[in-house]
Length: 322
Ligand code: C5P
Image: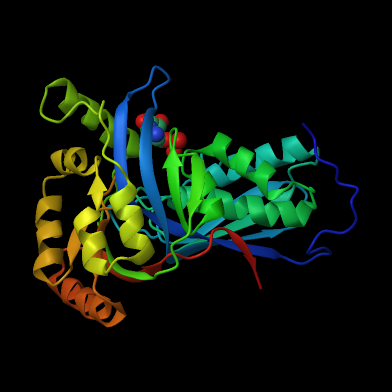
């Protein structure tokens, strides 16, 4: 497949920079089927895009280069470093989009990170989605949103949702999406740990705990409907009761101190607290925005987390800005 690039000027042309941003996500429902032969797990999830954004800026250049600033780039010990070479999903997004659209992969790409790495917030996926949107405009590829979504699915299970945003039901390995109309805003405090957790290791721990009979085997998955109903028209307390995450038990098994972090969040007034995706970020649901701000102040004061962020969702997916 190769897309036409002869369709006239793109949305943004000339020597200037193109800027896009994409949100973090929380899986408000995550139920996981047994391991597939290809190393992935089928799952049923409800994604919620939240207001913590990474920003990707791309500029015309002779070759391909990548710089990263913000979260994950400090010299602070224990903070996960984000790679700046082809191991970075953004690099792979650039190469894939260039190949598919028949252009040379030429751009100077900068990622300004607010979403911590290896935190269960799909930060790398957000970067890839924002890069697809920005480079699509820079290179004037002529790709449709659907074609970009196809590339996103090749890059990672969560990248299509980072592109779409809002609320969506995810199936397959997470890349098959049905948008959910849920405009009601929910307010959260994200408690971010000093050290990340690797997603494959949390899935592997889930498989191990299931093999030893310590967790249900995943052949019967609970319905995501209670979470969808709560997000659509229930009070925050209904959502608090419906939150589920099959990766929480294995993440806690790998990082037992997360139990204390979850208790700290509910003790401080969260309606409920659970892990975002594969963790270790604690997502604490608040009654409203004011409560979220107070909850964040309490948790910051207790020093249980490296940092805390107040966010709301749903918010849109990857978009051009400026
Ligand atoms: O798709 P992505 O590359 O983000 O997935 C990272 C890893 O997470 C996979 O290699 C796999 O170990 C695990 N995973 C999984 N089942 C999924 C999604 C991810 O086992 N549905």
